[in-house]
Image (cartoon, rainbow, N blue to C red):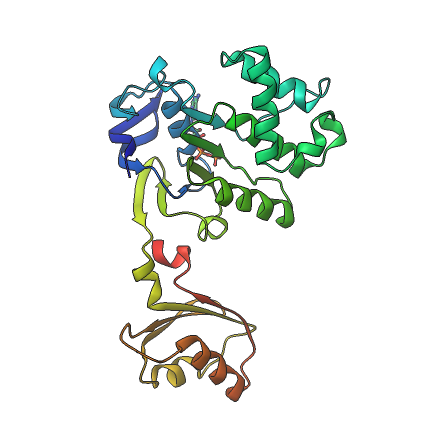
Length: 299
Ligand SMILES: Nc1ncnc2c1ncn2[C@@H]1O[C@H](COP(=O)(O)OP(=O)(O)OP(=O)(O)O)[C@@H](O)[C@H]1O
């Protein structure tokens, strides 16, 4: 895993507004990285600095070992703004070819890049259509294809699923998962839960400060289960805590319980045990998730 991006003491002020306040992190190639935080946390500011659109007020930042915006980063890092638009007058093919030409591809190469990237996002059938003929989710896929032109090593997607219905949002997440390999994605979102299964690393920003820099490890996840119920079950904690394999049960939020299970519970299948118990006690559950939810890991 090579270090793609490194920031230390990174700050950005807009007048007397501090959008980023001394942020330190490293991003390595591999699984997608989540950049999460509430409105105004500094996510877009950070993306803009990494793209070289704006300069930091203080601190250091490097992308592929050089200052963002330097020619060495061209074609290696792509960013898709939240409000990226397609031109309604031109076909998908025309627009993708245009962006490929802007990146320096020849006419012939641009045709190839347009066809290659639209295939990657599963939209080959729409190559000759104009954006108005496409659904919101399909248009989002086309803009992601645009970000993939030239096979960049890092692709930053700002709120990639904002405004999409759950089905299309899931499709975009699946797309990112399927393309993660050669490309390292950095995804910003307000929604922790939508990124938790996708990302290997989380940067949590709040008021310009990096509150958490968390790497999700499989081993760490293994010992936790999250049980979501139809309703609060008053005796659940006591009954579960009484089992040999259970180390701790907490009511992590309304109708949700986080169960810590002994890592050495060899031969036991704690998830089956927990569900069997729910059945015996007539507790109605919604979902049993292997691991802590990202929200519970961060807070
Ligand atoms: N060009 C600018 N001029 C002045 N203030 C700015 C500018 N850009 C951002 N800010 C301020 O910096 C802070 C961080 O904004 P930023 O857009 O980076 O947050 P964000 O996390 O992307 O928010 P959102 O989730 O709402 O898009 C906010 O308080 C914002 O008002």
